[in-house]
Length: 122
Image 1 (cartoon, rainbow, N blue to C red):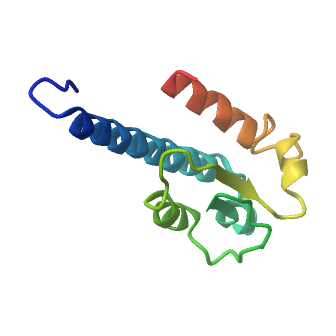
Image 2 (tube, rainbow, N blue to C red):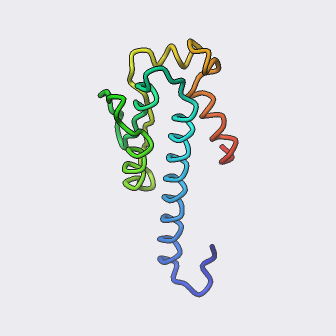
């Protein structure tokens, strides 16, 4: 993306839009990875990944919720400079992260963080 032939303001707007799209893409990819990596018994943990912008969301959701769909709704609201929270508020989420499940003995958030960091060069 160059700015040859464009006004500097047009170029800066394009850079901001491109950065926001990348942040949205990383957020969606992260949530998708969390959902796929989540161990499943009742499905409550898999459905309880929450994306919020600006501050954490300390509520809980039921297993009928679609975490990826909710993340997509939040992702379109992300602007450059926003702090994005991705969390799971279930009581046993910390135990799962510490290897409590044979389905995810290395955890969920830590392995997803490593995967996303390697993929996007973090």
